[in-house]
Length: 381
Ligand code: CTP
Ligand code: MG
Image (tube, rainbow, N blue to C red; front, side):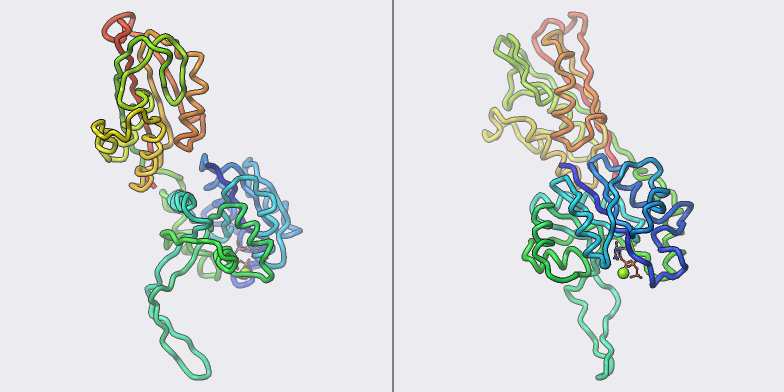
């Protein structure tokens, strides 16, 4: 499922000083805001970017966009007010709210948050406190236990409707969306935060951010690439249709198998498991297990996507070759592409379907069976 990203950039940056609000100051060659914009623009699952800015700063925001399409909205007096205005424009079912002052967010952070939304209303990255803590007041210095204390970062991810409702009911400003959502009873979980994803707040923070952004890994959204290949064959007999790449094709054949015998989805599942170092489809869904009898193979692939993500691999591209004389694949390629993209949460442009015959040679040529090959490319997050 895609998401809307709301970047709040309407603050005055008082603590950072320096005249220009911090989100428009240059860091490693470009404005701080444009780092977050680029990160979201590079994520195929991000369907909308909304930026909340101060009334007189629309022009400054536009210079940060470099051709990326965004929706601009005026921010408010407080961070809560700025988020409220941005949220009104969000058209996806999930929303990620992010500080423009955190230019070092990563795809891994985004992926962990999105995964958490499958079972929670909201999620935010958090880091344990490592320093000793103390409170100082008239009574002097009192140590405070750091047990169960966390530092909360952004992006903060939510199911859009419950969050909108929470904002509608909130009577005051809150430091962030987690605190507002919790005050309204939403179920929020903490995911792993990242030290580098710190909020540029004070003058000395610029140098640290600049150094981290200048590292090659920050300049390139995904540096480490993994690949896996899959191959599957199913026997063919007379029947009333075949399941291939998630699409049912009416034809006088039938593929024999324990599940729905979708050789295309099986080859992709194996390729993804291969790219993730997670064995093969039989390890996860043994054919001896009766519960997979007649199963929709989309379920196998969805499960593989989930465990691949848990293992730190995000599929980014799929290339499939179907090998058969019949049925004709050409008329179904577009539907297959979209169905696979939907199952794997990919942009359809990142799914390619090819088909070939074997010139009537071999078992595919004689129509005894159909074969499928797939290569999946993944990014390490
Ligand atoms: N923000 C906002 N609208 C406000 C206040 C803050 O959109 N009325 C945004 C900031 O632009 C920033 C994020 O919220 O991206 C986090 O806020 P903070 O780090 O406090 O930024 P500033 O408020 O700009 O800084 P300061 O508090 O030092 O003035
Ligand atoms: Mg502030």
